[in-house]
Amino acid sequence: MTEYGKTLAPSPTSIPGLVVWELPVHGDNRGWFKENWQREKMTAAGLPDFGPVQNNISFNDAVGTTRGIHAEPWDKFVSVAAGRIFGAWVDLREGPTFGAVFTCELDPSRAIFVPRGVGNAYQTLEPDTAYTYLVNDHWSPDASYTFLNLADETAAIAWPIPLDQAELSAKDAAHPRLADVTPVPQRTTLVLGANGQLGRALRTELGDAAHIEYVTRADLDLASPTLASARRWRDYDTIVNAAAYTAVDAAETVDGRRDAWAANVTGVAALSRVARENGITLVHVSSDYVFDGVLDRAYREDDPVCPLGVYGQTKAAGDALVSAVPRHYVVRTSWVIGDGKNFVRTMASLAERGVDPRVVDDQIGRLTFTDDLARGIHHLLSTHAPFGTYNLTSSGEPASWADIARRVFELTGHDPARVTGVSTDEYFASATAPVAPRPRNSVLDLARIGASGFDLTDQGDALARYLN
Image (cartoon, rainbow, N blue to C red; front, side, top):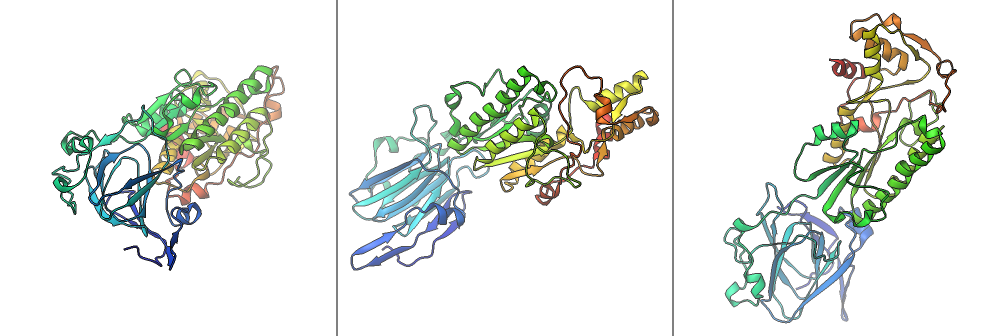
């Protein structure tokens, strides 16, 4: 019997992500009315904004009609339009809850959200039952489907009507037992720019699990007109964009400007479209160069962007594109140091070779080491931090490039007084090639990433660790 007057409310189950929803049904002498799925109210109450693309209805005219157990590679919101069913759900995803079972009855006043990879089955308890479900992907012959036998002894589902007295298909009756089921794998995390300095750090941080895919531009070209069909994107959960055009000075040339816009804007636009259309979380690495560096305080995430040069303009444009993706993290960083040629290694080499460098002393900021940057990205993803923009650098007292150079000399056993500080204008006075304007203040406020629970690394400690 449909229950009237309920309050919209979710009830988590023993299977992670499987949530029963009590639905308000309004009835009178004419019948009843309900909002079967109401995006605004339900997402506010905790339902994932799963983006349904199809609405299916299964009509069953006889009591005891039994269907399942089917696990598809998409999410479902299941409800009953008429009648009543006994539902059974079995977790067929790889992981510690594989084989977990949950059962309950559904009628028009109760629905359930079924996450990808959880097997769905039901048995009708009333004649003329209409079973409905919203799904967030279209059926595809390329998709992987997983099934479990309705009579599996391990699941041991207590069907109200014994299966030998129920109406079921020969195909459902022939599905495998749990011991023979291949678990549904996790959705894939794709890391772009896998051979760059951040990409290599992400390999170390995220590891080589089967659901992590590392690619270079040779493997996946964001400029390709076939990008939308280059992967079965609904099988992907996260894309980490560690690829970018970063030749700051070269971006001021005719060819460099074209290449910077192609990689940092056009490619990011295509990637954002893929993420938006397939419910993928997009992680995008940004830069302090989106700011002009004139503030006398650290830059916060919500400060207006005001880039000085072409590189900064392309990064600011990319940030805006990514920010339109519902599930996104823009990770803004500065002065990145990783595996490969970089400022710290150059200073250490000069110190060792007896060269006394002139280094700019009017640009102030903090270093960011790629292992910390990779760790911070992993933290945001694993803790499901609120989506949005996060500044992420080392912590500690800001310093100039000259200050850092002197510290490198000191840590490598050389006299820091060998480093001479000069202004940016002096340093580039004799340059013959185009030089990009630099923000003088590159200090980023770290309050938000700290509040998320991330353990920030002191700049001085990180530098000493890097050199050792």
